[in-house]
Length: 120
Length: 202
Image (cartoon, rainbow over all chains, first blue to last red; front, side, top):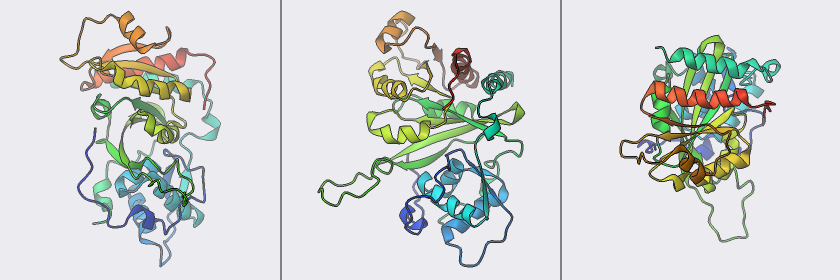
């Protein structure tokens, strides 16, 4: 069980997205990988979108990790990320490349990987 | 400060080799040791998101009713293990009470399976979560978290009967504080997923 952190974000979740409740790209999953595209952010980008871009400067993050870092609900990060993808500022990649979605070896490789961890 | 500066996020960013991201749910009632297990194997300190229980179930505001919309939140803990070959395994600590149903559906989407943690001192606390897992069709294994004062006189048959488990459902004991023990429990689940046929991907 986890206690709530004392500090709350200054920007409430419902304001962080500018009042938008549904992402423009519904396919963003919790494990969708977000990366900065390297494009320069235009002036006037909302603070919450800038904060997400800033978090991606150090590397890629999943939607879930971005939500934890920004202390925003996953639903809000989906809206923010979708907006940034629409502006070509962020690239979104599915958790598993579509071609490997049905890879029968995936589970075996997970098991092998877990076994290898045990010897550490 | 509204947002964590990026300088504190090092170590949380995905390794460049990350190629396939998969997740397993660590499901169980409050206090059963979900976060302890995640912490024992995660390469990052467990993170959490605050989830509003009402958001997924209330698509439209009901202006007629006097009933207040619930704003209860629940913390979802998660951790991450990078495996060789570009696989990144996420562990999502998922509470299983009936009132989390809508959240459960969102979190379980695309999951490989669930490891259901059970406290043998209060088996009945796990009935709700087992119900949700079975309803979602997610394959699962059951792991008894071995609390020091847990009763040890139950036989496996008794525990299986108490939980009404199918004969093929793996049942293991683990110490969630111990990384190797937690990995063994995860392996029991993954082996179960491999043995199931035909593998139906969600």
